[in-house]
Amino acid sequence: MVSEQPLVEARNLTKTYPPRGSTAEFHAVDGIDFALERGESFGLLGPNGAGKSTTMRMIAATSPISGGSLRVLGMDPMTQGPQIRARLGVVTQDDHLDNELTVRENLHIYGRYFGLPRAVIRERATRLLDFAQLQEKAGDQVETLSGGMRRRLTIARSLINEPDILLLDEPTTGLDPQARHILWDRLFQLKQEGVTLILTTHYMDEAEQLCDRLIVVDHGRIVAQGSPRELIDRYATFQYIQLVMLPMYLFATTFYPLSVYPEAVRPVIQALPLYHSIELVREPALGRLGWDLLIPVAYLVAFGSVAMYVATRRMTRAMLR
Ligand SMILES: Nc1ncnc2c1ncn2[C@@H]1O[C@H](COP(=O)(O)OP(=O)(O)O)[C@@H](O)[C@H]1O
Ligand SMILES: [Mg+2]
Image (cartoon, rainbow, N blue to C red):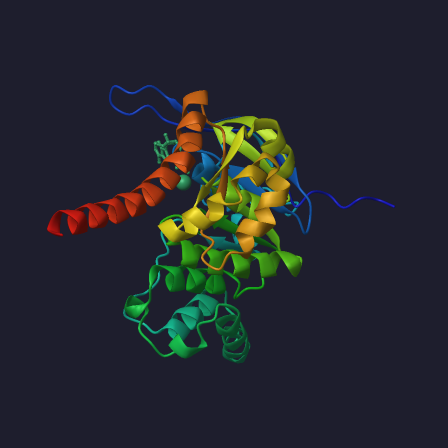
């Protein structure tokens, strides 16, 4: 059996921006290699300026490559841009939604860009509004939507041409925790349906939720790669828990001894109704000490204030007597 060729294949891919003023030529992407199979969910994890968006634009055939090679769906982005773009779904960092139009109209206009017949767009738009949980907003102007809803609409819009690959550039940056979780849920559903995803993110927890495999990029180079689990095992030195409310935090600290075994504590924390997020980070020793200290300090503050209150009341009463 001949194995299927990768959906995207980059070899020594580079992007160089020309010198500007006194700044020298700049290597935004500096020789990266990766290959992506159908149905995979692939992540680019890295800090600001790592070259993630630049890589995405090259894959989306909206920015020419400077060196190396890149094949997307078996095609060359330099010469077959329109054919590639027709088969991709793209969610860029800025959404470019039309604020004056309604939610449904935005989907229709986008469908028309792809030259889809109106009846097809109508049917798909209804299905996608359902998927994005925006049925009730269908007739509302886009400017009335929350950040999370806008992002869901952008994803719905990117699916109107039933793309072979969905590219998502920082899909949850700037969203509140709840909106992030709703979005993860939607993206996870796409992944379950076998949609091939490429996404960029700053967050390890996001990569862990959504990616089968990822590359960690910094200064245009790959600094690590593997499955999220492998990377966490290799690089995460401790686990800290971020929770929305102090009572929740104190409740979670009850499980603190379990955090020696992250596998054991994770389902417990995730089951908490106000679970916010768990992040696995690589931290210097002092950072770790800081967080570890926070737990006894939180206990001391909580129980200390109760004890102080009781003691003060007793003293006041004794003095008044
Ligand atoms: N059009 C451009 N001209 C010059 N430099 C650019 C351009 N676009 C991006 N860069 C630079 O390339 C680097 C990588 O940018 P980008 O791909 O947007 O990073 P990321 O998405 O990982 O935050 C940054 O240092 C950025 O300033
Ligand atoms: Mg970016």
